[in-house]
Image (cartoon, rainbow, N blue to C red; front, side, top):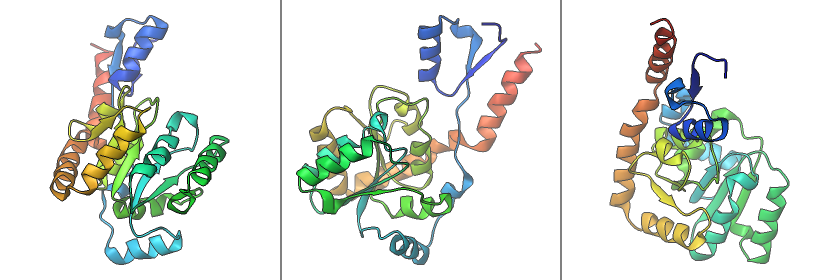
Length: 232
C-alpha cells in the first residue's frame, strides 16, 4: 500500500492484485517475463539423439515441464492418454506427493509404459528435449505467467494450455486452450494436432513471431519505463 508503483508479471496477476488487495489498477504496471536465451537456439539432430538416449526418452512424446504437484494438473494429460494412441508422455520436474497419485492412476489404467516422469534434468538439456517433443502441454490450474510456455514457443514447439488464467497471455492467439478439467477435450485437440501437420507448422511459425514480445530488450525497456515514470 505504501509502494509508489507495483510491477505485475501479467494482466492476470494485475487483476488478482486489484481483486484480493483492493489496489487501484492505475498503480500497477504489467511487465512480462522472458526465458533463458538457450531456448531460442536450434539444436542439431545429432545432439537431440544424444540427449534422448541419455535420458532414455521415447522416439515420439508429448511434453510438460514444471514441478509435479496438484496445481500443475498433469494428471489431466495422463487421463487424456487413454484416448491418444501411439505416443508417450514425458513430465519433467521436481516430484512432490502428487506424483504418486499420477503414477498410481497410470498403473491402474495400463498407461505406465507410456508415462514417464523425470527429475533433476540439467537446464542445458531442456532445449534438446523440447525440440524433440511433438507438443508441449501445460494444463496448470493457476500461474502468475507461465514461463514454460514461453520456452516451448521459443523452441518452435506447438503449445496446448489451460483456459482461465494467464496462459493465454503467454501462449498467444495461435496456441490451443482447453478446459483444465476435461481430458476428452484435451485428447481431441492433441489428436487433431498430431494428425494435422499444416496446423502444427502454422502454430510453430506464429508462436515464434508472438514470442518476440518477451525478448530481453522488450522486457528491459518496459521495466525502464516504470522507473522513468516514477520521476515524471
